[in-house]
Image 1: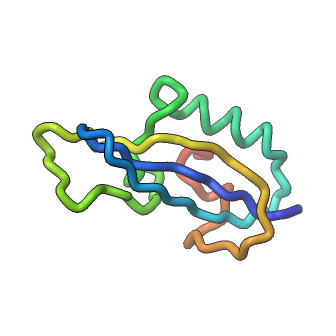
Image 2 (image 1 turned 45 degrees about the vertical axis):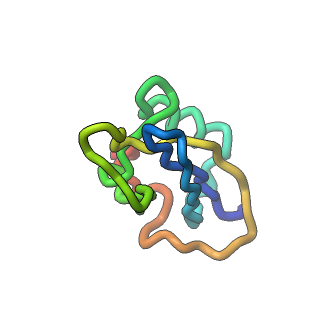
Image 3 (image 1 turned 90 degrees about the horizontal axis):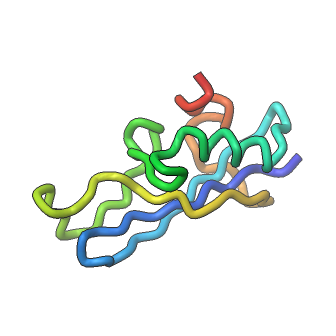
Length: 98
């Protein structure tokens, strides 16, 4: 089964966006729909999450202001990909699976 690409972004208080993604290996061949359902159940209002709590790179903009800018990231979507994995751990090692 192909790898899983997790797409997300950071949006500051001025609506400036910084996009990113992480490609996970999927050694247990979890179906995309099942992964998406699990991810959304762990998100804040099925949309936001704290990247550091999921051990994912934070995508903050250059001029982050902790007084007015949020510190959460926004889930954009999941997709199958043939891109090589670039995450330091497998999909099933994400903290949301524990």
